[in-house]
Length: 333
Image 1 (cartoon, rainbow, N blue to C red):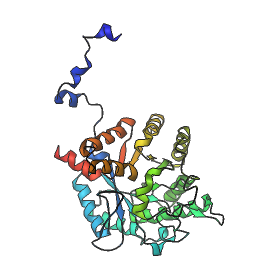
Image 2 (cartoon, one colour):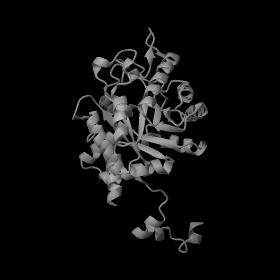
Image 3 (cartoon, rainbow, N blue to C red):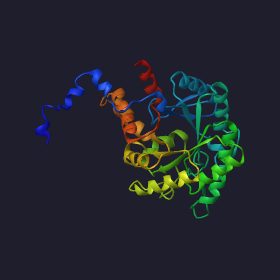
Image 4 (cartoon, rainbow, N blue to C red):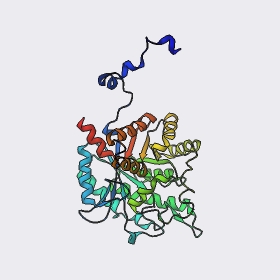
C-alpha cells in the first residue's frame, strides 16, 4: 500500500520546518495543566534541602506564601501541600492529622489570605502523622484497620475543608473513604469542595524520595503498603477502583505513579468521563534530575517530553515537581 501512495504522500512534508510542525502539533502543554507539590516544615524563614530530590526543598509557612505568589505569577493554577511533621508529634494513631493548627492547616490559611484565587490541594492520609509510616491505623497484629481509618480520614478532611482547602485528595487507598468524605462534606455544607481521589495508586518503589521528604515510611514492615495500594501487575483492577470512587462522589481521579503507568492513564481516560490527573512522582523526578546533573540528558527537552507523554496518554492535569521550571520556560517562549 505504501508503494502505491509514495511519492504523492510524503509524511516528512509536515515535519520539514518549525512553522508546520507547530501548526499540526496534536498536544500542547500549558501552565494551566500543572499542579505544584510543595513540602511544608516547621519554623520561620526555613528552607531545607531534600537530599534525594535535587532542587526540591521543604519550606516554612512564611516561605510557602512566597512560593504561592510565585505560582500565581507563573500562571500555575494550584499547589499541593505535604507536611513534614516533627517526630515528637507523631504517634500510632496519627493524632496530629486531626489538629486544626497542624502545619497543613496553617499553610492553607496563610496561602488563602495571600493568594485567594490559587487552588490548594490537600492530601487526606495518615502516613505523614503516624510513627509507623502507614496510611492507616494498625490493630494489635499490625494489620491496617480499614473502617476505623476511614473515620479518621473523614475527620481529617473536615478540618482541611474548614481551613480553606479547595481540593480534598484522599491518597490512602482505604475502601469506602471517598463516599464517607463526600457524605461529610455534603452534610457539613462544603458542597463545592472537589474530591480528587488517588483512585489507582500503586505500591510502587518510585515513592522513596517523597517518603524522605515528609519523613514517613521507615518502619513499614515486610509487606510495606501492598495490602492497600495496588499491585503494579494489575490493570483491570484500576478500572474497578476508579469506577467505585466515581460512584462514591469523586470529581476527579488520579493515577500514581505517572510515567511507568501511562497505560493506566490511557485506559482510565478512555473509559471514564471524569478528569484523570497524573502524578510524576518523586522517584521519576529524581531519575530525570540525576541524569541531567550527570550531563546525560538535556533538562528542558526531557522534561517537556515527559509532560507530552502524560498529555498524549489523556491526563487533564499533572502534578510535577518541575511545575515552576516548566511554567517559567513556557512564559519565556
